[in-house]
Length: 414
Image 1 (cartoon, rainbow, N blue to C red):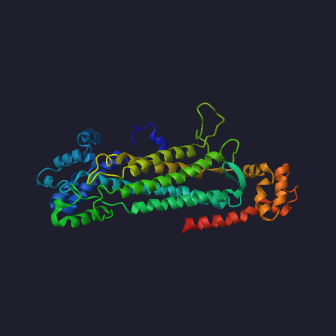
Image 2 (tube, rainbow, N blue to C red):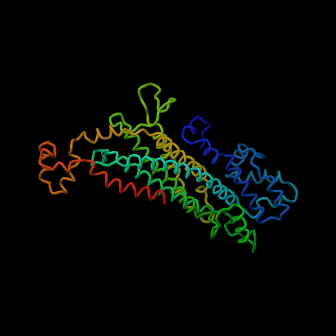
Image 3 (cartoon, one colour):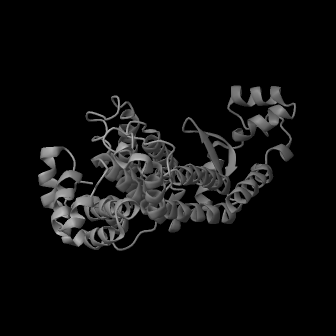
């Protein structure tokens, strides 16, 4: 999320950009410092520190420039916060902590509301899929395997498949959210600076922030960040599958669905006749970038000994991007699905384009294999080759599709 505003608004809604932006990270670091003071410092000092932990008191750009010398923004922030607090209370700023304690805890604090936004967009997309599944439970269309027509299905069943994937992706994200934990270990992950009170300070610190209390400091145990990245990548992938289907179904030669138009949406700079599936396009672009960012989080799991020499530093921007872009993908897909126009007539026409040959499997299973072979060899219809007419109605596939749709909707509602 390093854009100055030209590109990122295309991909990520403003509320999500703000949730993972510089000001959010800065306030999260300050919230961690305030919570640490309340957990470990005398009450008067803790109050004095907490009063100064307001992001508007500090210049994020200046902190970023100053951070280059130390390799992380906590060092200049602690210096600036100590100056702001002043007096005897300043001795208790950041006392017993290390930079990674504050920045990792801040990452968890940033992730928590950002995940709520991502999950909200996934829920919105799922609701649209559930509506489409119900409305089009009997809308016949060709199923396609390897991009070729295979058997009759219904558009409702296709939407139900999208729905279940979104529900399961949301469950992975919710599980990762439940494991967001504070980080507190001190210089080498031993809590030694707090003496015999270390575990009590850790417990109070977690309680102050409403985050989980880890079993041990996780400075070089990056399972939490990796599983968060993996869950975001899974969610982005579930969204991208929907976007790809929509883009394929909206092709001129297929024309079975179209995204809502109007106000220039989906327009071309040179081709006025085009109606591009822009929501699907944006969702796919976001998903691919989110997956790349998540890959960095997974690839950065191996940290040297008790403090990483670069792998930890590599996580901050990709975590921000994975959160924002997964939410952006889900938001774009939700918008596309909310206004999706389904052309049932075109679906049926495409289904009928191969005559009755899409019903060859049913005919063969009913004992008419020789007739199917004759039809395929001669290019004649199954009916003309001797297959009974009652086996050649594609509506016979609706019942099994509806049963699966009901199962998906029950899963969604549970």
